[in-house]
Image 1 (cartoon, rainbow, N blue to C red):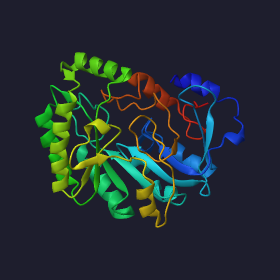
Image 2: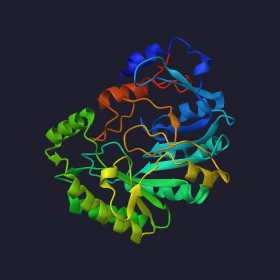
Image 3: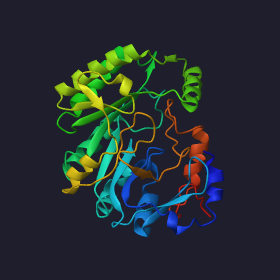
Image 4: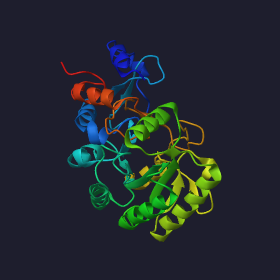
Length: 315
């Protein structure tokens, strides 16, 4: 998505009939809103709606953030620290689940994320304050490189799982999907830092998934696979990252939503995402959502937290 073009397209006001119906709000698998755009998000909660660029073209759309319209929130992040003090404001609107990615990869692959010790401390804090069903650990995506071969993943995953034992009950895993952006980003990073990478065959992926699932089970958590049904093996199951059942547990009442994934193999319940592509400058080498880290840095620097949409520049 061309974020500047999307921003320009927001100058008109969409018909309010396009306001999303009651549903779960995703914030966001397109960018890290808790880490980077928390002030904007809380401002949108106060305003009761957000204007969102359509990543597939066409006009922007509005998503209601009013308590009467939102069933729950799913917060996707690698660093919820900037939003920790504002979680009560989110909970006042609707229950929330945090999909928290912690992979502890080398800095050559993840130059801009917080360290795993800090991330694990944040997950522990979330679970203590908001309940053990609130946080889901994501070891996602699994990327095989000369720096991170299978044996490295086994040891790394085991260390993280031990640190999160009895803190989370689920770990979501997937192998990197090699989209065009992913390939470009990995190729550029490998040239810059002198490592190699490859996409393993499915049988090798399944073998590693089975080993990781056994490690997870030994630490009282189940391993689920995100949108990769061909990799499900004994001891694992398909993930539902946007999960009305988990939200129901947190809300204390049933939250009904139909299954409506956003790609083949996705079992997520229906949601509306309020993020924007090409807006996260954390610089992960395997990222599918960002074409240029430099452009994402400019996007973040220009963002006005008071505006109704991501991508709206400061005046």
